[in-house]
Image (cartoon, rainbow, N blue to C red):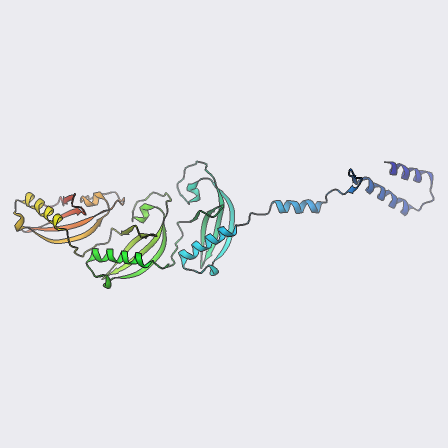
Length: 331
């Protein structure tokens, strides 16, 4: 204020300074007054508008996808599609809060509970497709949208291939050497029901990683589902396994005794004409039900045909022989 007083006094008491000089002095004094003084009497300028905008831009910068998450997603996409990582591209990623694990796992029918998972939605370009992933913050959980048709062929481990071929040989009666795996497709089955060829499944997402495997059996193509470890192998129950597989003698005797008791014909006059290894879709199918729910709870066993006089009686028997059922249509 002292400077302004002196300037004002000078202007009022003297007219000898040119007008331009007076204006310059006034502006200089005002700027000096606008400076703050520190404890050390050092002038500090107020932050400029440009500095404030820069600070805001830094604070609002979008989260960057961690390299570990990006690598995990690309590795998964490469494994499923058979496309080299170098030929894949992350086209978009969005930091996201998934309301609960069901939503994180692409569940279509989810409760409204709030158990948030912080993470990302990541889009990967795979050839002509865009694959959507959900990943948590650390990348320890990565889920591919189950609607994606991950159709790339990934090498099926030899040990698993042999397991499948041995199963097909046992069911069909065809030597392994005459069977061929026509196709093996890496696949994520949405839940155990889908893995087990269920026709009516809930929309829960409880994924099983594995393969869909097509085996050429003479004139037929048999479809198997197998998990990653090979511990679960399931044949499509719609497949008609026509080959005869040796029926254990103890089970054969049980079936013949049941037929003898029902028919009044001596066991020695009865004959098993066919025994086919079979996977029944569920207990209802095993029990010759005509209207069955399409749940898949498989029963492994045999379909056995017994010659009784002029008739052919059809039995279903499980693997252990503890359950033997005669077709109720048999007179």
